[in-house]
Image 1 (cartoon, helix red, strand yellow):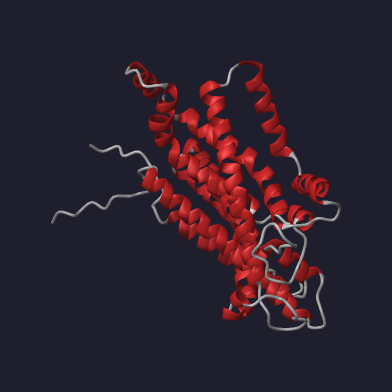
Image 2: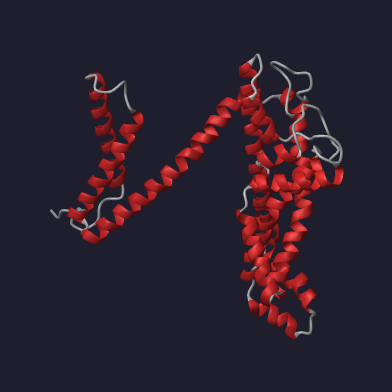
Length: 356
C-alpha cells in the first residue's frame, strides 16, 4: 500500500497561518489566569483587566518572536516582531477614540430625544429643555464662516500655486503659516475687538463669532487647497496652454476640476476643525439661552459653548445639566461625522473619471 505524504508545515520554514492567533489566545489565557490567582491571593484589588491585557500582549510578542525564530529564521522573526509592535501601536492609538465615542454614546443617549432637538433652554432651570438654539447658532455661524473663508482661502491658494512668485508670495506663505499656529482664542479676541471698535464696547453677536471661525478656517483651507493644486500634473497645464487657452480658463476648466475632490475634502476638514471651537465663540458671540436667528443682533449660542456651560454651571438638578452636556457632545460628533460622509460623497462624485 502506498501512503499519502502529509506535508509538514514546520519543515517548510513557515508557521501555520492560525499560529499567531493561537499564540495570542494562549498568552491572554495565561495572563488572565496569573492575574486571577494574584487577585485571589489578595495581591491586587480585584482582577486587573488592563494589566492582564498588557502582560498578555507582551507575552504574545515574546512567544511569537521565539517561535518564528526557531522555525522561520531570524529575518522572518524580526518581521513578525515589527508587525506586532506596529499593530499594537495602532490599537493603543485607537483605544482612546473608541473609549471616547463609547462614553459619549452611553452618556448622551439619556437625553437624545425629540425634546432635546425642538426646545431651547429659555426659562429651564432643571430637567427638560434642549439645545435647539445652540444647534441653530452653530449651523449659522459655521456656514457664515465657510462662506467667508472658502473663497478667500481658495483664491489665495490659486495665486500661490499658479501666479505667486517673489517676495509677495513668500510673505503670504509666511503669514499663512503664522495664522495656522495662532491659538483659537486669539481669533476670538480679534473678532471681539474689531466689532467693539465698530459697534461699541461689549458687543457680542453671531457675526463676530463667524468672523473668528473664518480666521481659523482660512489658513487650513489655503494649505489643503494649495497641496491639492500642486498635485495636478504640469502636463495638463502645458497641454491646455499649448492649445491657446488663457491661464484663467485653464485654471477654471482643467486645474480646479482635477483637484476638486481633494479641495472639497480639505474644506470639510476645515469646517470640522472649527465647528467644535469654544473659546473664540464664548468671547465673540457670547452666551444665551434664547433662540436667535439673526447674526447681526444679540448674542448667539453654539453647541460647544452650551456643552461647556452645562458642565461647569450645573443647577439644582446637576444630573439634568450633565445629561444635556453629553447629548450636546454626541450631537456635535454626529455633525462632524455627517460632514465627513458628505465630503467623501462629494469627492467621489467630482473625482476625475479615469475610464473611457
